[in-house]
Length: 362
Image 1 (cartoon, one colour):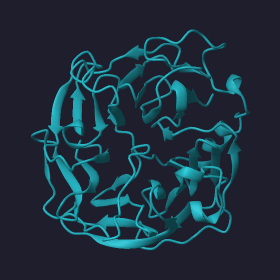
Image 2: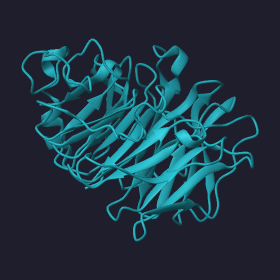
Image 3: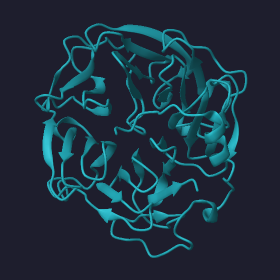
């Protein structure tokens, strides 16, 4: 199944997360740190490795991760071993190329998105577990910069990127019948102050039925949610009470629970230790309106996911926080910090971060 927030019993979720403790030993399966494989990945702490910012948790056993280098890696045994499945057609092309987002149905079929200027922004697909890859889409406008995409169970997908010369955000739609991407019939206009989006963890955009929502920042005002209720045919905007001064502040990640509840998290990436109510907001109507929390996360947060029953996780380089009341209040979950968190359909929680760090809750 695609990597979308799944609903489940909050009691079951909290029973599993209660086992988390600080330190490498708490992050599961490999009993001791081992020599990194070619992809630089193992569960626990790795001293050297890529910066991992893309994550798709399929199950407790199957997980895809992506990052700088470029890096694409797959585990099918819960992280005990990893395969470097980085597409050959992007290896060596640009040493700075980042693979920022990934969505997968299983251990065989997956899509990855590279973020970068112009033709560096592209979307690739594999149908054989990463042995071979096909380029489904590649940007041609030199001003283009894709930030992320989301996909539903039908393999319909929406990708978004920074504004082009016309002042509108780049929005691409995937037709599952043809496996082709096309520009959306309309795209929302960016604020003239220079509004953009962040290719942070690939979770700045979410699909929720016919609804598409993505979040922004860096506009010298406050973050915004840009919303389509008709499969990207038309758009509206909502203010998110997260300050968004340039160059690296605003909303970085979005999580929706499928029942109208959701959170946006972010802050100032240049001051990641600075937390509080200006680093998050919550919605109860699918993103149409947003409210600041009464207690915020402890720092800037770049990734988030919904656990169900109003429970949300948010993670960043300075730690991981949890909200049990729909985003109204946040509390410490762990001092371990990551770039991204994702929940699999079976309830497994996976995290990825700096220096090739991957973690799964026991």
